[in-house]
Image 1 (cartoon, rainbow, N blue to C red):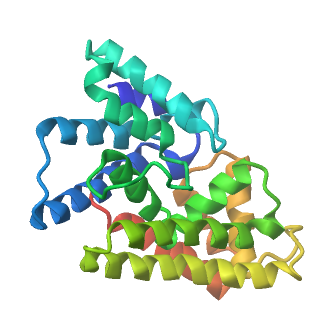
Image 2: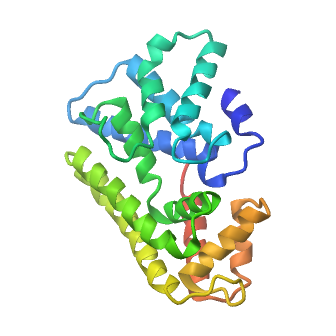
Image 3: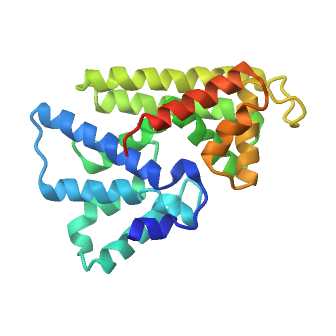
Length: 257
């Protein structure tokens, strides 16, 4: 299978195949909700969106930076070629993939557009306890200073949340559900930012919100799976660290893929 082949030797658990499956589950929920509001989607629309959801971050195997969308588009074109499918038939998927990480959201105009659904489906996977992990892992991989991550996440996530509310204001149940997850993410990184002002990132006294980042950084250095973090967290006897990794484990186990 193309997707498994792409991610087989790729180490970035926050953006692996499971992330892409979760994004499709989010998109499926949005599609269903919009359909209930009277918007109809053709099979072609759905096929474009499935492909976009499952390949939008594939380019990270080449480039983990913000411009990975163009690399993802190339891999999608390769996927279409292997299946002898016309790129013209899947131009919505290709365009959505290439631009999904443009958080200026200038290309989004209607909530039923594939680009809008993909972008928001990806954004809401960045909320909650999973989102905390995703942000820490990708920002650490991009060599951003640990002391600055709290502020950077709050800025980036607020932009994502604002676009989500603006685009899907007609879906109050989805907004209520994701507001809880956004608040979880935002409150964590607000506390992280306050602790970072005096915290020494030296692995000598790992504790609190910043300690979570140190544990994840160590796991990245050793190329360990996410579940190793659950075991490592218990070694520190820190209530916040234990709380976070327990909630992350619960959130991951509660998702049907």
